Every structure is written in structure tokens, then in C-alpha cells.
Length: 116
Image (cartoon, rainbow, N blue to C red; front, top):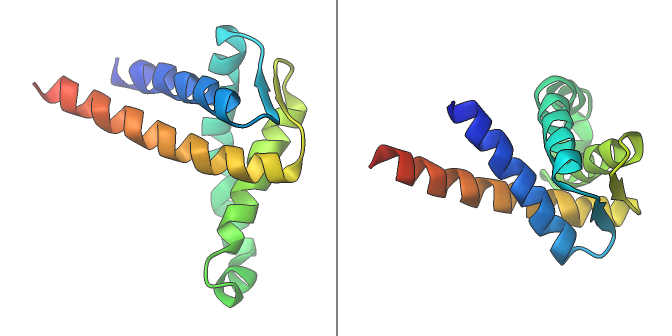
């Protein structure tokens, strides 16, 4: 049950990102749910491999390359799915940053509510 709530909150976070970043577009709640699911799989399966492969450049840039990697993955998911569109790489970077902030805030709030 908790996983379904987090999934729905991540879809809500995608809607929030689409409202704040002009280059990120979500067509509807179903598209947001699918995009949140795909982003979760990409962040779980592909991102760790890419983090290890790009470790030298991440160390040289003192970790700032992780922003580029997150933006690229956000942009990639936006280019693969219909109903979720990310216009450019830089919109992907800003969208990924805001998505992680909104997702964290919503998940933290939900965890506080579930504890009570």
C-alpha cells in the first residue's frame, strides 16, 4: 500500500514540475503515473550503472556531473514516453532537480501522516 501511495505522490510531483518548468509537459494523470513508474525503474536499474561508469568525471567535477546525469535520464524518459515530454537537456536538468525536491517533500509529508 505504501508503495502505491509513493507512486501516486511521484506522479503528483511530475504535475508540479510541469507547472514550474515550461519545457516539461504532462498530458494527464495516466501519463504522469506511467512516467513516474518508468522514472522509478530508470533510477533503480540504469542510474547506478551510469554512476559507476561516470565516477571519474563525477569526482573531477566534485559531484556536479550527477546533475547532468539526472537531467539526461529525465530527458531520456521524456523522449521515450508519449504524454510526458521534456523539450531539452537543460529543461531535463531543472525538471530532475525540482522532481527530486517535490518527490522528497511529498514522501516526507506522507511518512509523517502515516506515522500518526
